Length: 67
Image (tube, rainbow, N blue to C red):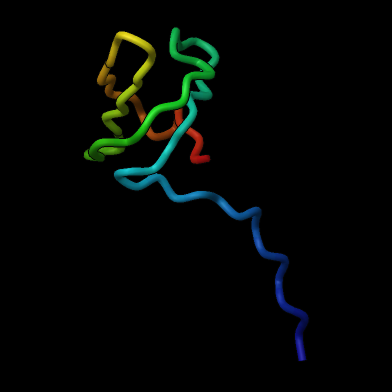
């Protein structure tokens, strides 16, 4: 019986309502954590909230990491 192949590292799926962190080193939002509002065409609208401001930003899914 063949041994099972090693499973890849578990990846947190990015879905609406998920908390994500921006990982793109060129983005001014790098390190910020927000909540995904909607996803379309490999992009996500992410809501960042902080103190007295809210900002909705569209980012590529490849720039985000699920938490």
